[in-house]
Image 1 (spheres, rainbow, N blue to C red):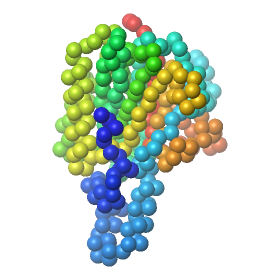
Image 2: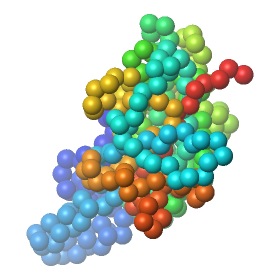
Image 3: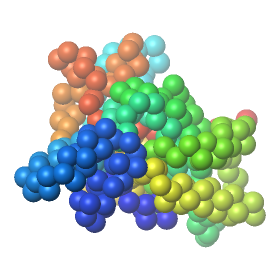
Length: 301
């Protein structure tokens, strides 16, 4: 369901893109419309649309990275690999895992200023021979060019992994409609702050909870002045095929990029002492929108 919400880069016409940017109070779009209404200048129109397509929030493409678990006591920079370059952990087959959100980086979203960002994750919980759809949403207020003040935020606790791995989807929605503030406040309640705790048996309450969560996302995504920004769909499995995205404990990075090879991970590391992904040469930060989620083994209390 999450894949049905278009990002700006998936809008069908340039006119639709411009109209959405005006709703979001993007200053450049408002200024462009004023001048364009007066001049009807085709070259000006093409230049503006070309500039929009170079914005960090425009691409519908994602590039993925993986950071292995840190060795206890080590502060050495950690390499970042593409998830197809790692070894899957076969001991996670038919087991249970936790998924947590460790970073939400808003390098640049449409509209500027401080953004209300709703993050929604969807997965398949394998209970016996039944796949149970589960979804969880949370909202964060993030100033432009910063990361949300979160680390280790619980999403799914005890997600049941099948023998084929897991399906995992995510979407971020930039909420600018002031009338939706009450909805965002509901997502900040204790009910939504503790993650979705799953069992080894089917849970009758999961289906309505998931339906409410996804219905909420659908409502906000379609409202004026709201727009999906990042949207990704991953299958994490145990296959040895060259292009497989393999499942293991560690951090997975989903970066919004103009093309799949925009980032050379050989030039980037995670520095535990800084708590950040930085360039090896000068410690500069990634100039992209991205989020980082963590996979760990579930432990019974």
